[in-house]
Image 1 (spheres, one colour):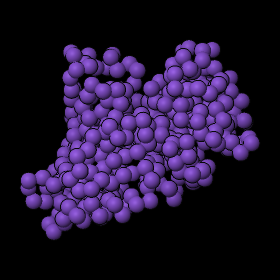
Image 2: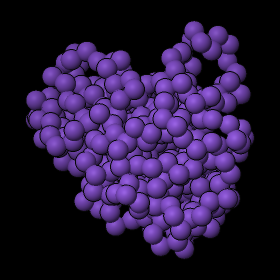
Image 3: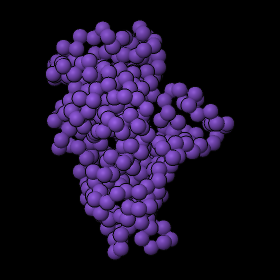
Image 4: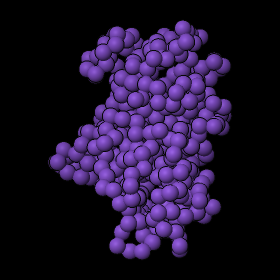
Length: 343
């Protein structure tokens, strides 16, 4: 740490998430960006990829040429499978901390990781040295860890709305339906190779219906917060917008539990969570208010059937679902104000 600022490195700086991360870090008063790294475009200026970035920053370089003795924190915005190899190589630097925005340290059981991601974990001994961190749930424990697993975008929107209710056993857990829609930036810069359906920019596309990888996170975290097994269906969709997520959760409350009770529990839980805004009951909601912010908006709504409700949760998949949440985690680790650099 130099001059009361932390020295940071961003690996994967030119991807959609990486660029948002660099943009917010460049404005953070307690951060010095020491290196911006990528596999391609070495020697180029990061401003060529994002005109929002005004600050003069290091040119894109190779991760292998860094003196890690001078670095406090490494952000890894890389394809799943890459961060684990890098962290294993660098973990012996006792002062160095890691925030991984891929799935490499999200799943605590390495056998389940292999099952969901079809690859052997290369740093099994480090999994228990990491923490899965949605900051609203980990404020008291995150400082005990050097490896922070930044959660996925869909699971972030879902857990902020559901975990407080599961913890209080207010919901029936046998038939939960989660319908989530995301902008195509969530698929990364190669989205056009992953999704080949016709009329991409003018249509809605359902995918990952039986086994989306984010279900592994939801399975794991639901189990932590619920005494009962959660049986749920999760259906993600791509919509023809660049960024943003709206998750719709169709739920049945337990007998005697009113919508006012559901709203009150969520309001109490998130009362000190500055990025979570609980709307009035039955408020119409979209993701327009949260785009380019680290905020989450939640609305609890009645249906025409007694004891059946819908909860909507809106975030920006690139910010609260990725880069902003990573910076929020960083702020907690280093005792900065939680919203520093994210206002």
